[in-house]
Amino acid sequence: MSAVFLGAAVATVILPEPTRHGLWLPVHLALAGGAGTAVAAVLPFFVAALSVVQPRGPVVRGGAIALIAGGALAASLGVVAGVPALGLGGAVAYLTGLLAVSVAAFWPLRRANDTRLRLVRLAYAAAIGQVLVGVSLVSLMLAGVAPIVDRWGLLKPAHAWLNLFGFLAVIVAATLI
Image 1 (tube, rainbow, N blue to C red):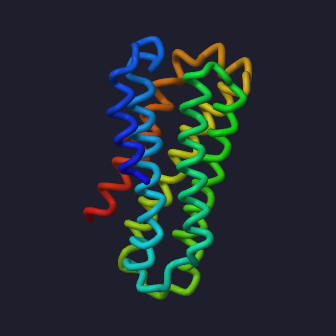
Image 2: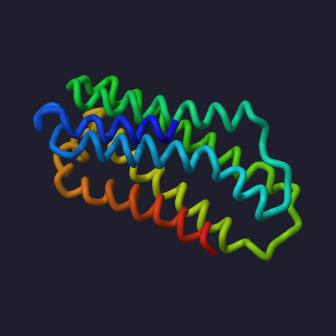
Protein backbone atom coordinates (compact mmCIF):
# COMPACT_ATOMS: atom_id res chain seq x y z
CA MET A 1 0.00 0.00 0.00
CA SER A 2 2.82 2.40 0.84
CA ALA A 3 4.43 1.72 -2.52
CA VAL A 4 1.17 2.62 -4.27
CA PHE A 5 1.11 5.97 -2.48
CA LEU A 6 4.75 6.62 -3.33
CA GLY A 7 4.10 5.75 -6.97
CA ALA A 8 1.08 8.04 -7.01
CA ALA A 9 3.18 10.82 -5.47
CA VAL A 10 5.74 10.49 -8.23
CA ALA A 11 3.05 10.30 -10.91
CA THR A 12 1.30 13.45 -9.71
CA VAL A 13 4.43 15.52 -10.27
CA ILE A 14 3.55 15.63 -13.99
CA LEU A 15 0.16 17.21 -13.28
CA PRO A 16 -0.14 20.95 -13.85
CA GLU A 17 1.02 22.92 -10.83
CA PRO A 18 -2.42 24.38 -10.02
CA THR A 19 -3.98 20.91 -10.11
CA ARG A 20 -1.46 19.44 -7.68
CA HIS A 21 -1.33 22.64 -5.57
CA GLY A 22 2.39 23.08 -6.14
CA LEU A 23 4.10 20.22 -4.35
CA TRP A 24 1.27 19.80 -1.86
CA LEU A 25 -0.30 16.72 -3.48
CA PRO A 26 2.90 14.72 -4.08
CA VAL A 27 4.17 15.51 -0.58
CA HIS A 28 0.90 14.50 1.07
CA LEU A 29 0.60 11.31 -0.95
CA ALA A 30 4.18 10.36 -0.06
CA LEU A 31 4.13 11.34 3.61
CA ALA A 32 0.54 11.04 4.85
CA GLY A 33 -0.21 8.14 2.53
CA GLY A 34 3.05 6.28 2.00
CA ALA A 35 4.87 6.88 5.26
CA GLY A 36 1.69 6.93 7.36
CA THR A 37 0.55 3.59 5.96
CA ALA A 38 4.00 2.07 6.47
CA VAL A 39 4.10 3.18 10.10
CA ALA A 40 0.56 1.89 10.69
CA ALA A 41 1.57 -1.46 9.25
CA VAL A 42 4.78 -2.02 11.21
CA LEU A 43 4.52 -0.07 14.49
CA PRO A 44 2.33 -2.68 16.25
CA PHE A 45 4.91 -5.34 15.36
CA PHE A 46 7.83 -3.21 16.55
CA VAL A 47 6.19 -2.59 19.91
CA ALA A 48 5.20 -6.25 20.29
CA ALA A 49 8.67 -7.47 19.36
CA LEU A 50 10.42 -5.02 21.68
CA SER A 51 8.13 -6.01 24.54
CA VAL A 52 8.05 -9.71 23.73
CA VAL A 53 4.27 -9.91 23.57
CA GLN A 54 1.85 -11.20 20.98
CA PRO A 55 0.75 -8.41 18.58
CA ARG A 56 -2.87 -7.28 18.43
CA GLY A 57 -5.08 -9.25 16.05
CA PRO A 58 -5.19 -8.66 12.31
CA VAL A 59 -8.64 -7.02 12.35
CA VAL A 60 -7.49 -4.05 14.41
CA ARG A 61 -4.18 -3.78 12.57
CA GLY A 62 -5.84 -4.09 9.15
CA GLY A 63 -8.53 -1.59 10.12
CA ALA A 64 -5.87 0.89 11.21
CA ILE A 65 -4.03 0.54 7.90
CA ALA A 66 -7.26 0.89 5.91
CA LEU A 67 -8.31 4.00 7.83
CA ILE A 68 -4.89 5.62 7.42
CA ALA A 69 -4.74 4.80 3.69
CA GLY A 70 -8.36 5.73 3.00
CA GLY A 71 -8.07 8.88 5.06
CA ALA A 72 -4.91 10.01 3.30
CA LEU A 73 -6.49 9.39 -0.09
CA ALA A 74 -9.78 11.10 0.75
CA ALA A 75 -8.04 14.09 2.35
CA SER A 76 -5.75 14.48 -0.66
CA LEU A 77 -8.57 14.20 -3.18
CA GLY A 78 -10.80 16.50 -1.15
CA VAL A 79 -8.23 19.27 -1.01
CA VAL A 80 -7.23 18.94 -4.67
CA ALA A 81 -10.86 18.79 -5.83
CA GLY A 82 -11.88 21.70 -3.62
CA VAL A 83 -14.33 19.57 -1.63
CA PRO A 84 -13.59 20.42 2.01
CA ALA A 85 -16.13 17.88 3.30
CA LEU A 86 -14.23 15.05 1.58
CA GLY A 87 -10.95 16.43 2.93
CA LEU A 88 -12.42 16.64 6.42
CA GLY A 89 -13.82 13.13 6.16
CA GLY A 90 -10.38 11.91 5.15
CA ALA A 91 -8.75 13.72 8.04
CA VAL A 92 -11.26 12.24 10.50
CA ALA A 93 -10.67 8.76 9.04
CA TYR A 94 -6.91 9.34 9.40
CA LEU A 95 -7.36 10.38 13.05
CA THR A 96 -9.48 7.29 13.68
CA GLY A 97 -6.77 5.19 12.02
CA LEU A 98 -4.15 6.72 14.31
CA LEU A 99 -6.25 5.79 17.33
CA ALA A 100 -6.55 2.25 15.94
CA VAL A 101 -2.74 2.13 15.47
CA SER A 102 -2.39 3.19 19.11
CA VAL A 103 -4.69 0.39 20.23
CA ALA A 104 -2.89 -2.13 18.00
CA ALA A 105 0.50 -1.03 19.27
CA PHE A 106 -0.11 -0.45 22.94
CA TRP A 107 -3.01 -2.70 23.99
CA PRO A 108 -0.79 -5.82 24.02
CA LEU A 109 1.58 -4.05 26.43
CA ARG A 110 -0.81 -4.58 29.30
CA ARG A 111 0.70 -8.10 29.50
CA ALA A 112 4.33 -7.01 29.11
CA ASN A 113 6.77 -7.27 32.01
CA ASP A 114 9.80 -5.80 30.28
CA THR A 115 10.54 -2.21 31.22
CA ARG A 116 13.97 -2.02 29.53
CA LEU A 117 12.58 -0.35 26.43
CA ARG A 118 10.20 2.04 28.14
CA LEU A 119 11.89 5.04 26.49
CA VAL A 120 11.29 3.62 23.01
CA ARG A 121 7.63 2.96 23.77
CA LEU A 122 7.28 6.47 25.23
CA ALA A 123 8.82 7.90 22.06
CA TYR A 124 6.33 5.95 19.93
CA ALA A 125 3.45 7.25 22.07
CA ALA A 126 4.77 10.83 21.86
CA ALA A 127 5.06 10.50 18.08
CA ILE A 128 1.47 9.35 17.77
CA GLY A 129 0.36 12.17 20.07
CA GLN A 130 2.12 14.73 17.89
CA VAL A 131 0.59 13.49 14.66
CA LEU A 132 -2.84 13.47 16.34
CA VAL A 133 -2.37 17.17 17.10
CA GLY A 134 -1.04 17.90 13.60
CA VAL A 135 -3.94 16.16 11.86
CA SER A 136 -6.43 17.70 14.30
CA LEU A 137 -5.22 21.17 13.30
CA VAL A 138 -5.92 20.53 9.62
CA SER A 139 -9.23 18.87 10.52
CA LEU A 140 -10.34 22.00 12.32
CA MET A 141 -9.21 24.11 9.38
CA LEU A 142 -11.15 21.95 6.92
CA ALA A 143 -14.17 22.08 9.22
CA GLY A 144 -14.06 25.86 8.91
CA VAL A 145 -13.33 26.66 12.55
CA ALA A 146 -12.77 30.41 12.26
CA PRO A 147 -9.81 30.88 14.65
CA ILE A 148 -7.92 28.08 12.88
CA VAL A 149 -8.87 29.22 9.36
CA ASP A 150 -7.95 32.82 10.17
CA ARG A 151 -4.52 31.78 11.46
CA TRP A 152 -3.83 28.89 9.06
CA GLY A 153 -0.84 30.72 7.60
CA LEU A 154 0.73 30.63 11.05
CA LEU A 155 -0.52 27.14 11.96
CA LYS A 156 0.46 25.38 8.72
CA PRO A 157 4.16 25.17 9.74
CA ALA A 158 3.09 23.64 13.07
CA HIS A 159 0.97 21.10 11.17
CA ALA A 160 3.92 20.19 8.96
CA TRP A 161 6.41 20.12 11.83
CA LEU A 162 4.24 17.92 14.05
CA ASN A 163 3.57 15.45 11.24
CA LEU A 164 7.02 15.28 9.69
CA PHE A 165 9.42 15.80 12.56
CA GLY A 166 7.17 15.04 15.52
CA PHE A 167 5.76 11.85 14.04
CA LEU A 168 7.90 10.37 11.30
CA ALA A 169 11.30 11.46 12.57
CA VAL A 170 10.55 10.36 16.14
CA ILE A 171 9.24 6.97 14.95
CA VAL A 172 12.40 6.40 12.89
CA ALA A 173 14.74 7.61 15.64
CA ALA A 174 13.02 5.49 18.32
CA THR A 175 13.14 2.44 16.08
CA LEU A 176 16.86 2.93 15.46
CA ILE A 177 17.46 2.96 19.22
